[in-house]
Length: 163
Image 1 (cartoon, rainbow, N blue to C red):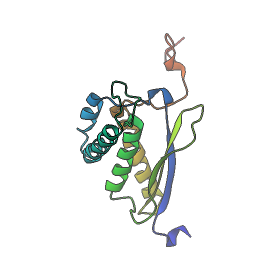
Image 2 (tube, helix red, strand yellow):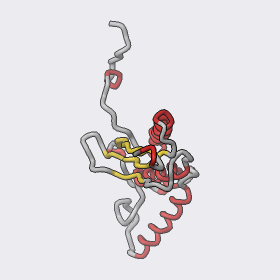
Image 3 (cartoon, rainbow, N blue to C red):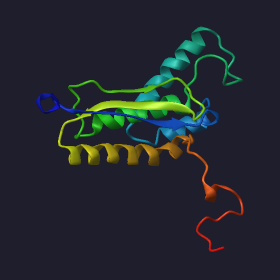
Image 4 (cartoon, rainbow, N blue to C red):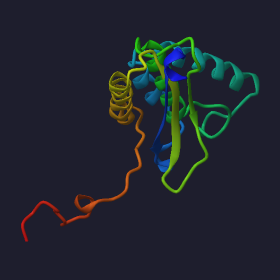
């Protein structure tokens, strides 16, 4: 069972608003290179894409032409790097960050990995710490999370105000 295994599975998704996904401009890429965890990946990927686009004489006046990086693609790589750096995650077991099929709530971005510690309370803290960080990181990639609207989301509505 789980107690004999090398970790406890974490399998959870956040939902990204599809309209917030976009190609990255050169300015966006320079800004994201300031994030130390993924700067080497971004630089390597940029060289690879530039080489491919040059080889195929791609007209770069429009971002849709050729191969380009997206904010969602780099965010996915960021989460992967974050998990690989996390000492509470068992890197000997399967670790993946992937898109699932889009839903009316957005694009599920699923984290699949294993915590080293199998004790329930520790596992829950590890999982919460990971998702606290992921949720707080979303705006750095100019992405948006999906969540159902509530009373305070509507103009002029304050659910905590006394009637």
